Amino acid sequence: MASTPASSPLSSRRRQLPRSNRQVKPWEWVWLTLWVLLLTGSGVFCGWALMWLTRIPPLPDCEQITPFHSSSDLLYCAKAQARTGEPNSLVQSVLLTANWSKTHSQYEESQEILTDASEQLLVLANRWAQAGKLDDAVALAEKIPLDTPLRNPAQAVIFEWRQDWQQGQAIEAKLRPALAASDWELARGYLQEFKTLKSDYWLDTRYLRWQRQLQIERQAWDQLLQARALAGTNQIDNLAQAVVLARSIDLRSQVWQAAENDVDRWSKTVLDVALQRWQVGNRTSALELASVVPPGPQWAGADQELLHLSHAQRLASQAEPTGEGLAPRYSHLFSLMEATHAIAQLPEGSPYAVAELTPAEQWQEQLIDLRRLKFSDLVARLGQRLTYNWAMYQAQQVEVDRPRRIQGQTLVAQWQANIQRIEDRPVLAEARNLARPGTIPALETAIAKAEEIELGRALRVEAQTLVAGWQQEIQVIEDRPILDAAVALADDGNLREAISEALKIAPGRALHSRAQGLVDEWTASIQIAEDKPILDRAKNLAYSGSLSAAINLAGQIASGRALSGEAQAAIALWKAERAYIWSIWEAEGRPTPGGSSTADSE
Image (cartoon, rainbow, N blue to C red):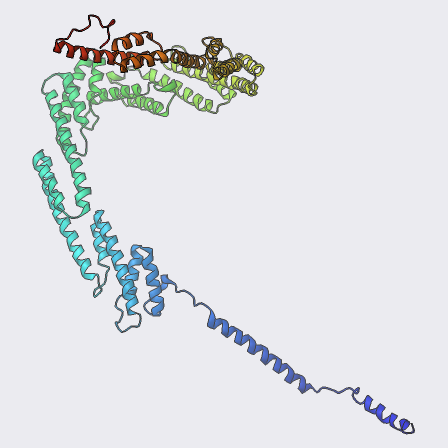
């Protein structure tokens, strides 16, 4: 116990020593910070290096590829461009894989791509050659470089194309003069020479083209011969027909050049006669003759003036209202405008420009009225009641004595009908809604509503059609119980009662035809039930050899009954058998019955 006080100060000092504050020197903080930065930088650098080592390298830009790129990039771009199938891409693919050294590690792969791209180039070039684009095909095939596997095949194909082309052009050079000389047999022989060529272009395209040309030339030549035959009659009407026929010759034919000279010569004669008829007062005939003469710079003076007048009248006739509803058309406006313009070209002193001899004023009036009607029609097409009323008002401004009066009144009638449709369409819609429940009161109400559309209105026919349909629905509702009751009686076997019930449906009713069909069916069932035993007994008699008795018994089935046809067929068969038996008896000298209706075959 005595030693305890002595040890207390020493122990207390020892406990107080760790609590003393130790000061950290500045250079220690620098080293700590430096180590932290080194560790962080090393980690970031290692992570970036790992990402760089494991990332996928970027794909090369094949648009900017050059021979100085790596072989992998060259092969990648060559393969990608070969897959496109485009001409320029295929050429680029060939260029990227050509001239590789055999010692190159990827030589085999480059040759596969080169061969594939070259084959595609040849296929594409051949397609162009067969389409007639020889120069493009040759230029494309020659893109295959020297010292490549398909260079020689490409040159062979080019030679073959050119050979076919030269032969085809030689055939065409012989064919043209043959057609011009109308030597059809010789031309047909040259045409067959196309079949000796190999190219589809010459076998199909050019062959069909010249075959059509041969048909055109033959038809044109036949037309020219017919026209010349008409012209040779020296009759002016036939000469006018010859001009029309010759002018219809196909312009693609070589015959047209010869026909054109004939047309000019004949037209001069026709026009001279037309002028003579005009001078003697036969102006209608003169204009008819002049209408077949084609315009041209060779006409002048009176000839040209008469042609202008004839052309104007032809244009005016084309402006006559035609077609459904006589609707005004822009073509009619243009024709009248051209007609008035043609008249305006006549000189003031021309006899054809005299007011009383030309309908120019009338055409001008028609043009004014036609413009009014056309604009009215455009406004009416908006489909509103207001626009229809405005259009009708404008159309009625065409006076009674004007040529377009009938056309205007026809349009007014159409627009009035459209207004009636606008007014009556809601009535029909309401009637349909009323009839939708399908009950008799609803249908009767709908009928009454639809009959509000008066006779002569645009929708009257449609309304009456609906009324007739609803009346039939009412009849079906009324007569359905009768028909169902008749069917129920028939199902129970009471066919006669079923017939009586079904006959209550009067003719003209909606279900009358159905009821009559059932009546006929049930009547036939009754007749079969009555006549079947008779026919069966007759058959038994015939099987036992009593043909005459069988015939007499089957004859009891009256004509028009259900089994009448079967009975008559059996009777005919039995009569034939009986006649055969009697013929045998007669040959044997045995007596035959005197009457077929009283004795058996036995």
